[in-house]
Amino acid sequence: MTGLGYTVPAVVAVAAVCVWELAFLRTGLFRRPSYWVAMAIVLAFQIPVDGWLTKLSAPVVTYAPGQMTGLRFPWDIPAEDFLFGFALVTSALLLWERQGKRPERRPARGPSAHDPARGRNAHDPRGELR
Amino acid sequence: MDHYQYLILMGGCLAVTAPLEVLGARVYRRPARLARAVLPVAAVFLIWDALAIAGGVWSYHPRYLTGLQLPFRIPVEELVFFLVIPVCGILTYAGVQAVADRWRAQRSRPREEAAPAEARRPDSGVRS
Image (cartoon, rainbow over all chains, first blue to last red):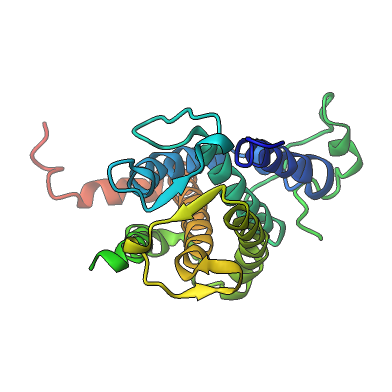
């Protein structure tokens, strides 16, 4: 693991968030268009904010070169920052969503062939009763 | 002023996302739900931050920080970051939902209701 002190945890964090949702929380967040639209907006704003923090000309945050891939795009933003940001924002959205009750939006009808969890939770597919 | 650079940036994030609350995001108006979403995440990421700082994975330029530190040499700005960014993310998500719900409501509104609104438009008489 030496030399990958940022890359490995960042990849693990993204995987952990996905497993957390798909295997445990099952809020359905990843199936919601609002989530993907919001994440695209968050990404668009991450670039100027993160770009400012990581710009190599006057960095607020400095990374040990041996701990990351060294891929920096756009500007000087380390690629790992996007994984970090995804994990940070998505996990907060999952906790927000888990408590949510949005009765105005109807759940999809009928169990889905590729989602066995849907059938089992058909009475409460969006976790609203939890 | 340089010492407040990181904090000013975080303040900017809050300022830019604040109008979403007015657009119908209703995030700040549900403080308990917001706290239950943001605080556990901030705690986990602060642990990650502490480990990364201790391991020399990343460091902060003292010129751009206030110098206030939490235990484990975590700059106070990092705590602010881990609170502000998830709040901004939730505001964005709830804002998108609010706008989408409004569109849906407008689309499903009966024609009889939509027609008078159209007639009230100041330019409606100009068009042939």
